[in-house]
Length: 446
Ligand SMILES: Cc1ncc(COP(=O)(O)O)c(C=O)c1O
Image (cartoon, rainbow, N blue to C red; front, side, top):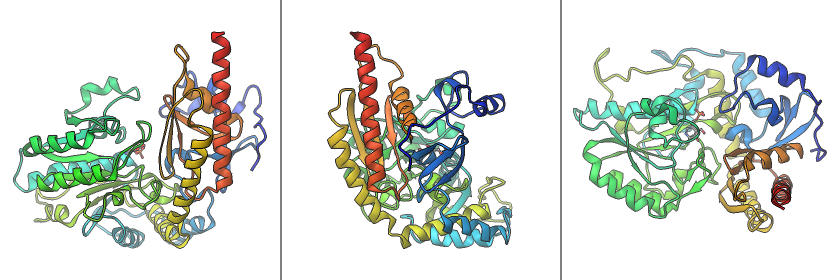
């Protein structure tokens, strides 16, 4: 790994070509060239390599998807092997061997009773499916009054209209408010009493609810807000007692990030979501795949006559892509064969200790929150200072560590196989960048 400052031509022709034709998500394109983006060409292990040959440690796992690293020979081979059979065959009305084999393996490890799995391609689509399944389930049971959803403050569930509706806004999405359907909302994990308030709302509104949706243990996009597992368990119990379906959105937390395969597991063996949404790390970060996992009870609510109204009339063209399922299957095996969760526990403890030592207590740092290898460093810019998250992360990128902020929260979400040395480097670079930005603003004020 190179610790040298990456070099980029003064006018990067790749950025010029990029802005001429590509429109990047969650990115102000007018500012894009000025924010010194990198143009990735290839990767090795946990490093991305740009078109100029500069190396960057991928400290955000390519937006929280990469788990074992890039170009893992075993994962590459799984795709090549599947390519020699078939790349894709529709799941609408027919089956696909790679999908059956992966679904069997996934059903055996998810904390959902007798899992049945609907596949899609992105996290938001998995959420959308879960909302529609919950809604139709109650209708199929002849309980049409159960049409509402309970969701938490600070929630983020994706960008499609249904997912936006259960999400709590922010991220510049206020313009879409007229498109959002109303939900019952109780505070998120930033409120220490969030669980008691959610339990009270469940009791008060159960008659009107199709489901409650929650990001178990960690609200990621709102800046890595972390809940107590006992609180999570109490909400699960309340849903069960009041007959409200519980949808756990594990798009960000699934596949080892929190130190367990699924964050729901932290709430104990009795915590059994009725529906679970998976995405991001499901293929180790290789191909777009997501899944909505339903319990047998929910699944059976849709059984009926051929072409009848009980059917779930929903499905995406690429849902259950064979290449994606083949790599997802091998990835699940490798998580086990390589004892990845043990490694996460070990290096996450190391990362926590290093953050306590070098980042907590720095001028300009308000809080450091962590669960496993999901970390949010909340910055506390001096009054009047602007774009701190952006400036700190730009400094890290110049030092060869790829970070991206959520506002003024710097998220560190390294691949699960990261070494202690790599994490040391991330912490050292981040601490130096925060100190640098603090010093620049102190000079300005002076
Ligand atoms: C909890 C959660 N749900 C859903 C999504 C949306 O996933 P995707 O971006 O794959 O649509 C995200 C993305 O960050 C997420 O964190």
